[in-house]
Amino acid sequence: MYIFNTISKEGKEEILDVIIERLRNDYKSSDTIDDICELHNECFNEDYFLIGYWKCEQWLKNNTQGIFSTIALIKDYENDIFGEGESNTDFANAENVLNMLIYIIGEEILFNLKSNIVSEMLTEISEICQ
Image (tube, rainbow, N blue to C red; front, side, top):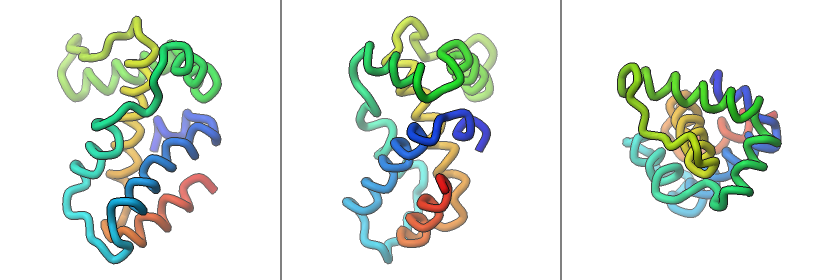
C-alpha cells in the first residue's frame, strides 16, 4: 500500500477509523460484503473526510510528505485512471486535494484486504496500523 505508507501514523489511524466506523455501524460482524466498490463509495465518496480549507491544509502539512508530493500522487493516480492530462481535481483547493487523497487511500486499503467478511475485515484493518 504505497500511498497509505506515505501518511503519518496519526493520519493512517484517522483514515482507518472511517472504515471501522462504517463497518461497525452499518454491518453485522457476520456479514459478507460482496461489493467492495460500494463500501468504498460509502466510506469515501458520500461525505467529505474533512471540511474547511484551513483544516485540510493543516492536515496535509501534518500528515503527508508535503502538499506538492500529494498533488503529484493524485496526478499519477488520475493519469492512470483517466488518461494523461485528464484531471478531475481542483489542485488550488486544499479541501479537494485532501479528500481526493483520502479517496485514493481508501481504495488502496479496501482493495488490499484479503477477506470480505466484516469481522475478518475489522481484524485486518486493526493490524494495518500496528
